[in-house]
Image (tube, rainbow, N blue to C red; front, side, top):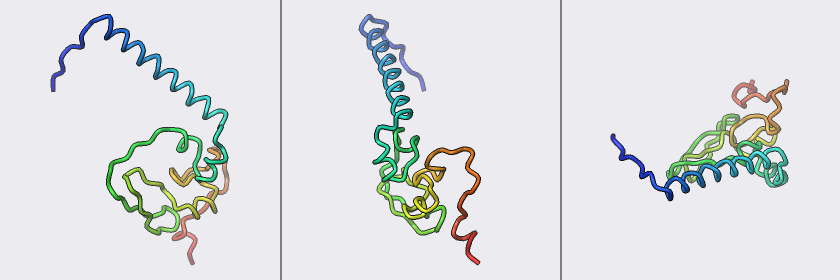
Length: 121
C-alpha cells in the first residue's frame, strides 16, 4: 500500500493543529469525568467500572452470543462489543458487568467470587 503525500497548505496545517488540539481537549475532559464520576448513579445502575462506562467502545455489527464468565448462561448482544458477565452475577460479585473486574477498580481486593462451575459441589 502506498499513500500520497498530504498537501502542505496553510489550511491543511491549521486543520491538523485543530484536530490535535481537539483530541487533547477531549482526553482532558475524559480524565475529568474519570476523576469526578459525574454519572456515578447511572454507571453503578449499569454495573460498570469507570473505564468501561466512560471510555468509548466499538463493536462489529453482528448478533453475538457469549456465555457469562461466572454462571455460563448465554447472553445475547446486538454487536460484537459484549459484556463478560450477566447483570445478576456482576451485581452479586460487585464486579463490572462489561470487563469482569472489580467495579470500584480496587487493586487491593482480597476476596474474589468464584465462577458457578468452580463453586458447585
